[in-house]
Image 1 (tube, rainbow, N blue to C red):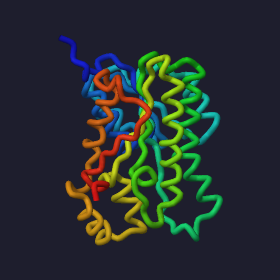
Image 2: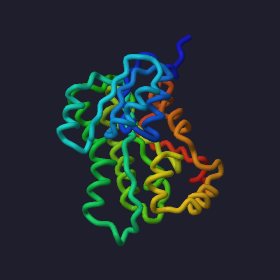
Image 3: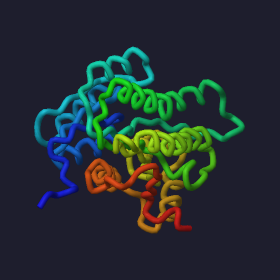
Length: 250
């Protein structure tokens, strides 16, 4: 009897694989038998992810997906994929009245423009196979809840949710599924490093109390990523999948 959760020999691209959810997703996918292509901007961190992958046949590509030349090169040199996990992203905590065009442009290019143009380029080049799975890593912020001083980040994540539904309809004739995965707070470098530069450990501790199951870990998200890449999720498309330890039940 075949196992619909099995990823053996599936070719999957993971962006943002140098850290956090992208890194753990790549590792988990490789443990499930997938042949993984990882990409990220930080070569040293990407090498660490590559070393941690199980199995063989994997590929690493150091690339800044906001750079048109590097984006085009990745698309041109890529093989065809059975799945893509678009996990690259940045966050900037800034009250709405202090946002500016430069900050908006930076977060928009990374969180929205780059994954959309990469997906469009791969589809145009016919490098996403029939029955493949496209997954945008979104957030409950902008999709399910609002968070103070998080307007720019929330806006980009809400935009991913919107485009997912249209793309899912367009790709349905090819049985290509398109979804977003919307996590709550996960203990990644973005939380323990980037966010905590502006938010104290005490404030994070108080925030975690709002999560019935506490903050998540990258492995919690990666397991769901693995499921959505598998044939077990073949009837799931065009939706935002909330994974937040009960936070949005409030």
